[in-house]
Amino acid sequence: MKALRELDRFSDLNSQHMFEALAAMNHRSIILLDECSKMVIGNIHGCPFKVLSNILQSCRDLRYRNLDLFKGIADYVAATVDIWKLKQVLFLLILFENLGFRHTDLMDLFMKKVIADPASLNMKSIICILHVYSSLNHFYKCQTTEFQEVMATSLTGYLHHISSENLLNAVCSFCLMNHFPMALINPLLQKDVINELMSGDERNAHKLRILAACLKLDISCHNVVDLAPPPLPSTALYPNVKVADALSSLLGEGYFSKNRQLPHNYHIDFEVRMDINRSQVLPFSDVVTSAADTQRVAVLCVPRSTYCLDLAHPRGFLAMKMRHLKVMGFHVILVRNWEVERLEMQDVVTLLKTKLYSAEAFLTADVNLQSTC
Image 1: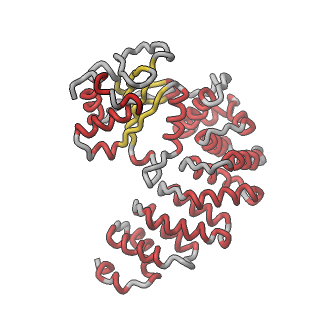
Image 2 (image 1 turned 90 degrees about the horizontal axis):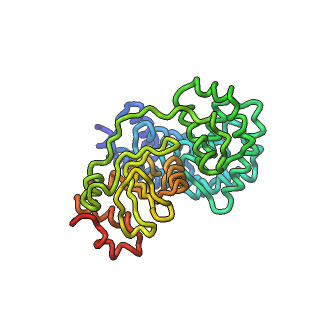
Image 3 (image 1 turned 135 degrees about the vertical axis):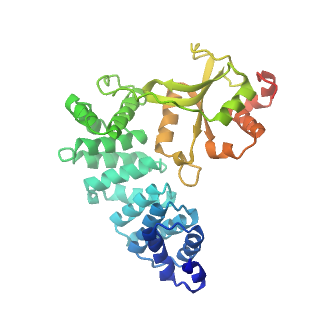
C-alpha cells in the first residue's frame, strides 16, 4: 500500500485522517494503524472533538484495539475536561464502551460532573450513561451510590414520557449496577407492560429475565412470579475440552459435573463440590448435601469479551453473574479461555489446582487429590 511507503512524510493531519480513510475502504492495516496511532498520541494536544470521535468510530468499525491510543485520547480529554461539553464527553464514553475500554479517571470525572449538574441531562443521555457505566462495571469509591440515586431521580422525572422498552433498558442497567429504584421498576411489573415487552424481540425477554433474577436474588422480592419469562430454549453446550480434561486429571471422574443449568437461567461450565474449607474435593452427586458441610464451586470458562479491554476488569454481565452465583452459595472460579489455549495440559492442571484449593489448603492439597497427576 502506497501509504506505508509515505509514512515518514505524514503530517499530523494525515495520520489523524488515515483512520477514517481506512475505515471507508474497510482496510484493516495494523502496521499503518499502529504507526498513525503513535503520531496521534504524540500530537494530541489541541485535537478537536470531531477528529477524536472519528478516530474512535473508525477503530470500532475496523475492529482495531489499541490500548495506548485509547488511553492517550482519554488522558487528554480527562486533563482538559472543563473545555468539553458534557454531551461531547458522553459521546466519547459511548465509543469507548463500544470498544470495551474503561478509563477510570475520565469516568470518575464525568460521574462527578453528572452528580453536580443532573438537570443538564435529557432522557436519552441518562439511558446512555447508565448503559456505559453498567456495561463497563464502573464504580467510583463512595460516590457510586450518590451517582445511582441521582440517575434514578432524574429518570423518574421522565416516567410519563419514556417507552416501556427504554425503561427496561435503564432498569436493566441499574440491575447490573446492583441498584434497584422501585419507582422505576414497579411500572415494569404490570401485566400489560410485561405482555407488551414479551411481544417484542428476544432482547426484551432477556432483560426481563435479568430483572427477575435480580429481584429474587439481590433484594429477595417474592412478588415476581408473573414477571419471569419462559426459560431459554435448551441448546447443546460444549464445555472447554481442555479444562474438562484437566479437571479429570486433577480430580478424577465422578468428582465434577459439566454443563450445569441453574435456577434463574444461569449456566456454569463445571461444578465441583468441596468441603467448607476448600481443602478436599467430594464425590459429585445431583443431591446437594447440607450447605453447612459443602462448598459448591462454579468454574466459569470465560472469553475475552467478558472483560474490559485491559483484560483485568470484568464487564457488567459477568460481574452480575458472579454476584448472583455467590448469593446462590457458590464459590466462583474464572478460567480465561485465551490463557488456557496457550498452556500445556500440565500447566492447566496446575492453574486449576491453584484456583480450586484455598490458600491455606493448597500446600497440602496433594494428599486430597483423586488422581495421580
